[in-house]
Image (cartoon, rainbow, N blue to C red; front, side):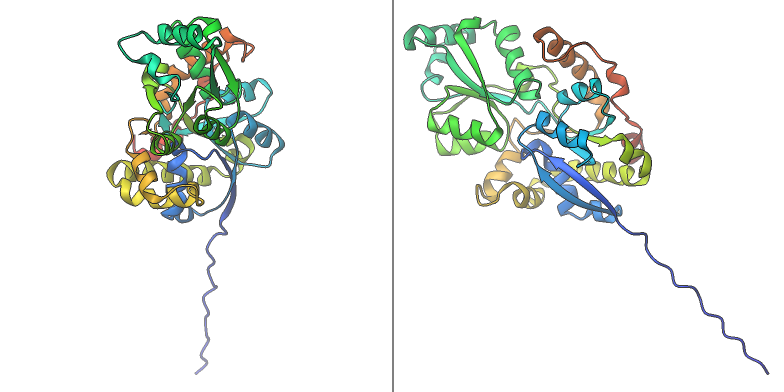
Amino acid sequence: MLLVAFTQAPTFAAEPVPVRIGVIPVIGAAPIFVANGEGYLKEAGLNPTFTTFESGPNMIQALASGTIDVYVAGVAPLAVARTKNIDVRVVASTAIEEMVFVAGPKLAPYFEGGASKAEAFARFRAKEGKPARLATQPPGSVPNTTLQHWLWEVTKTGRGDAEIVSMGIDATQQALLAGAVDGASIREPALTIVQGRNPAIKLIALGGEMFPNQPGTVVGVFGAFADKNPAAVEGLVKGIVRAVDLLKSDPARAAKPVEAALGKGITDLATIQKALTSPAAKFTADPRAIVEATKAMQAYQVSIGTLDRDLPVDALFVPSYYEKAAGR
């Protein structure tokens, strides 16, 4: 009898999709660090590499040149990017109301005793003979836009009573601790770090006061990457959704991958865990939650000249990935 042997053809797992992720080193970006550290991105068939940037506007250059595929930073610069024909799509949010305002040891006492915030700045200038120097990130960024909105629209601070100084995230923190500036718009983990090192630095305004429902860090995907790798984008967003859930349910566990990404010998796990549960840490993956606030922020950017014109914001957001990942 003739026996015929049949061999089954070997099966191979699909090759992981390389994805180059640009990110700013802040707590608002924690979901991407958690998604990576917990293995959610690997499970989704992604092979991520990370590049750190000092601000969203700086990252736009990398996006335009095709050296990153995914942008994890403030939403505001993306409107500017679209005016330059850079096809980037917001597929998820990560955090809202991140930016807060803190006053250094010299400025902080002027906010005591029931004085309005505009009066505090005016009294500082009258006493010190110069406007308060306030650090933030470059024009066009969420931190800069938020600070200007709070100063000029919310508190009605006199234009001559505050001077805005643009610098990077690390430089802002260092300048505040060194007393080189009088105040700053910062976010976590800088808020926890600076107050831990100098309790005389006071929290003056939370993000919701500075800009209602302040849109913050988002996940933007380069259009060419999204068109070529739709399943990878779905996996990325699903990982963000899972990470946000973990950040809310078990911040102690979530702190470990965040500290691994942000600590780098500068801070410790306890500080990161405290920052994750701070009033300045509000995580959400739903991009639909910030559409209206993004429109309002864009309109304000037009009014202060950091954006040429209003753009169709709805075209910037692609919520279908989130809706599928979240099952709604």
